[in-house]
Length: 403
Image (tube, rainbow, N blue to C red; front, top):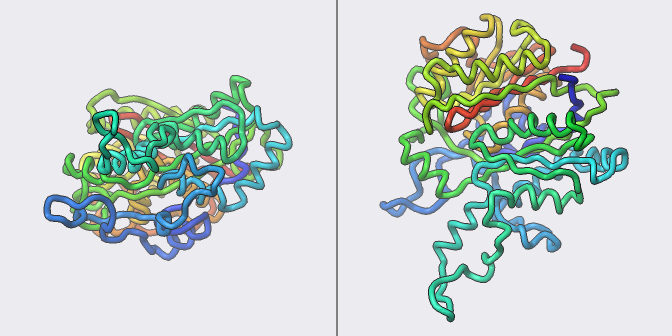
């Protein structure tokens, strides 16, 4: 495929707001996980005993008055992320060049603003006409829909091109790059604002816990003693442009696949993961040995890590530096794709290749590609893997223009 320029990108996580906070924490191997202090209490009256990657200050940061209709935790995080790293000035430049009608909005989310729906049902009031109703401050249909995020961002930015929500669990904000690339290739847009946001809520914490996937301690991806994930929240965005003139960073390829193997477990041989990675490389015309860094999906669940490592070892040489960054941020679900794409882009810009935080004893089943320590060296290509429930897989390949 013809590459697309990346004109700006940003991510806000438990490590802080923007790329500098992300880079500095990765370089210092300083994680953002904390003991859970969020969500409805369990049967014992206390929060679920686990570790989370929480973004501070959202409770005290309502949206500006013109956007009060969309006010919720998820959209507050989206608003904060939009303000970082020169994203809005870069977007203004694209609007001047192409017009608001020619810039698409393609955003991924897994739970959108479901936290507000949880709150509304918990606070149901008697309706004078009979039955129950939401409290007036939460009787806003726009925040009780999966499209809440994209609808808010479209209004907040004034963009009028195609607007779509991708909700494919943990691959959501990786697949937005592929969706936007198709829109641009089809001539329906000249540029795209892509990204994703997911925030913590009770459904996420207790839903994953019901599957016995949540660890009681900070997650340890690819460690021999790993026992589950740590959940987090995050938001991020990137600007894609069909014109690559003067661009330093590029989206070179993408690959998508669906295992259709099981609702919550991956294909045991990593078939779908391999297909996604191979497709991304093929679209870019890049050999596996040319990839310098791979951000692994690496959730720290026993089955997922082993399967992904097997797929990586079947495709890449031993020299690849691959690591999972979820020990820093937690698993940010529908935002994982954009956050870890930002980390891959940082690797291209700065040469910082993150390893895997919190892990000490490598699983013998994992290949030599999986690294625990950071490295520092210049690379030409970086890949990001994002795999969701149902075997919904997406791999993205980014490159430096000089490569």
